[in-house]
Length: 556
Image (cartoon, rainbow, N blue to C red; front, side):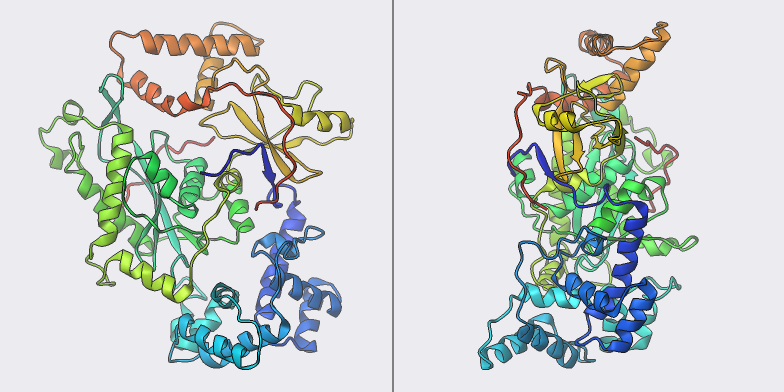
């Protein structure tokens, strides 16, 4: 597990204005195809310069920035260039060999693999006495090419046509993580709470599948209805190394599939079209694509997967099956026996079995084998090392003014010594600070220091207050309003939350609703530790059964 840190860098997803963000996106659309060329002539550079309103010299400068960049959209943002900071660049002689052999060897109808191309590059570099580039560097150059141009050269014009429009055939996927489909479903199972083993209702599943290999690359099981937070947590699970998570579940299974996808394919639900998701994906170079209206077969892969998973769930005690006719006289609540944690462990084992089985689809081989072939062709897919920083890029955004006592958000005060330099520099012209907050645990927030571009993790000012959810906070405010309280302070708010929790704990026989709410709070048990205010360390530069539509979409 990564070490806890009080701050990490913000890479432009919040600090860039809408104008600068749109300019960075426009620059990327124009510069990326030029950067993939072996040479960029004056005519092409002049055309790009006219479109962007800059000089020819600036176009060549932007091309160099793109080639040396980190792969994020913000590489070409105004005055925010990372410029390949901390990274070396291959010598131009080596770059020239890579470009030439990609054009001559890779862009052919014989469709040679990256492994074969790399052997030619390696041999050519050794003959000329040059340093041999890493295989990942070669794969990166190929990924920067226009996908339509690559498919047109290797498979013909007809194969590339589907990438240029939303026709009647979904685009063909040629590599792992080129496209990942994500969707939600309510699980056909009633679960029980861990204390009384009494029914608390049906949980939700958010799941992500890699289209090329059919491997499940991310999963989230929760009691909360689908929201933008669900999508962000599923993405975080997708990109990180899953071994620490498997150790927490005490499971000895392999789940090696991880990494950032090149594109997400989603339906048109509200949680898939939030500003936080759009900007977070654009920042990390993940394109968002949506199913064309009236073409449900475009999402057939993820819906088929959900159908397979639910068929397996129907064998568990407490299943609700898919419809009342199928359930018959089976008493789902009476037979319910599994907790949310036990269901998560069972689903993880089911995923491991799924990966090793040959399914009735067009692949005719197990997903694990297909993934291994994709790794052999594309090279190792790097996982995200700082999962917390990645997840924060997808959390909901709020804005607040900094006072001498810190921040006040929804009647709760936040403060840490790390804010003192910001308090000392504030004045009447200081704009509101950008803040991220996890609705599942609002005992701390992440505040963006616009000077250092670091996120600061700030806890409660009153350290004796327990960790709570945003749902609890809203319920407490509602009850205080019902009692006629016009002015709500922090003390009365947490006193009400304590009373609400006491009622739940002391109930002789909890109702289903209370048991469900109690289970929602279980993940906060480890978050009630006291925070010691302290100065933060020096900044660290880190980087087939269709799913039924939801009538209730929870927006945080």
